[in-house]
Every structure is written in C-alpha cells, then in structure tokens.
Length: 305
Image 1 (spheres, rainbow, N blue to C red):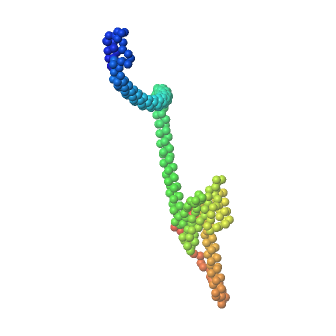
Image 2: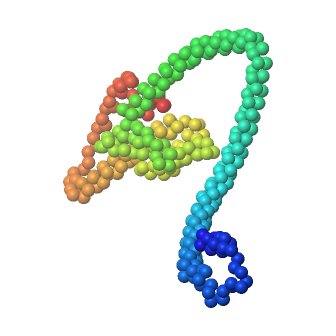
Image 3: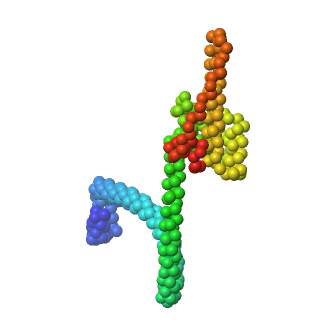
C-alpha cells in the first residue's frame, strides 16, 4: 500500500510531459519497477492471507466459546426450570401447611372460646363436683365396710374349701388336670388296697347347652358312669358325681379281688381235692365300731367339695 502511494505521489509530483516528449509503452519499465511491485503485491497477499487465517482462527475460537457458553446457559436453564418446579412444589406445600395451620388455629380459637364459656360456670360446677365427691366417698366407705365383711366371709369359705380339697387330696388321692380338649380330668389314688399308687381316671367337659358330658373313663364303668353324670346334670352336683365315680372304681376293684380269689381257689381245688368232709367254721364276731372322728372318717362320708 505504501508502495502504491509512493508511486502515485511520485507520478503526481512529476511534471506532465510534453506531448512531443511522450515515450512509448515499452519504456514504462523505466518509470515503474515491476519486480518491486510484484514483491510488494506478494507481500500484501501474504499479509492479507495471514490476517484472514488469524481472523478465521479467532472466529472459530469465538464459535467454540459461544457453543460452550450456550451449553452452560442451557444447563443453567434446565437447572432454573427444575428449581422453578421445586419452588412451585414448596409453595404448594407451604400453602397446604398454611391451610392446615389455619384450620388448627380456628379449632383452637373455638376451643378457647368454649373453655372461656366453661370457665365462667366453673365455680358452680366445682361445687357440684365437691358435693358428688363427698356423696361418693360416703358411699365408698359404706361399701368398703360391707366388702370387708364379705371378704372375711369369702376368706373363711375359701379356707374351708382349701381344707376340703387338701383332705380329698391326702385321704382320697384326688387330683385335677385340664386336658388338651379343655376337659376336666379327675385322677384317683388309694382305691386299690393292693396298689395305693394305682390311678383311676374320669374326664368330663362342659357343653354349650349346659351341664357336662363324659369324655373318658379308665377303667370303663359303662352305663353306671353315664347314669351318675345324668344325675349330676340334673342336680348340678359335680362333687356327688366325683364321689360316685370313686365308689364305682372301688366296687370294680372289689370285683377284681373276688374274681382273683375265686380263680385262686379253683386252681387250689384242682391241685389237691379235700379228703374229708368240710366243717362249718364259726362265724367271726363283729369288730367293735369306733366312734367317728376326723381321722377315721370314711372317704364316702366326707363333705362335698
């Protein structure tokens, strides 16, 4: 550019030649240095290309920065949208809480108003309550006195029952047990004179219609136990049933003893037959009967449970 300007300035500063002194075109090389001009043009082209390359690189860098900024801006936009949603949800929750708290406040205000109304009548109500408490206290004292008397009677009755149960357990060997089917089992000992620890058992169960039903009997007493239970259901006397079953067991043991004795006699008769006529033995004199005391009372004569 400077070369062009210098050439233009040199051309303008030179005086216009006379028409008669005009040189031919082939002499223009004497006026303009074409090699220098070509070099200047090449240098200018190189400068322009370098400027364009730098400009293109700068534009690419700016585009990359713009894309990065756009990506960051888009992420920030998405984050702002999510934040807006969160804030909206929080605002709705706050609104619901405010509504709930307002309802509670209204309820508390209503209760406070009711409490204030009740507080105005409180002295009179307290007086009525004091009178009721005094009356109930007097009634409780009377009931307590009555209950103490009833408790004493109940304690005496309980002690009597416990004594009777203990007597049944020690003298009759009687014990109780609840079975898997909720039946009540009665176990008897001291029934067999040959084996006092031998146990006899009868089991009954309460039925929904009322009364009892026979669940088990060992040894089996057949219809006799059923008749005793029918009498128990009729009279509602379970103690009598327990005593009656023990009597059946004793009779069964006596029958077993008689049968065993008869069998032994038959075996003895088979072994050695008598060679003489039997002689009637005198009847034994009856044993004297001792007066009845709590220590020689027979089990069948004991008081019911």
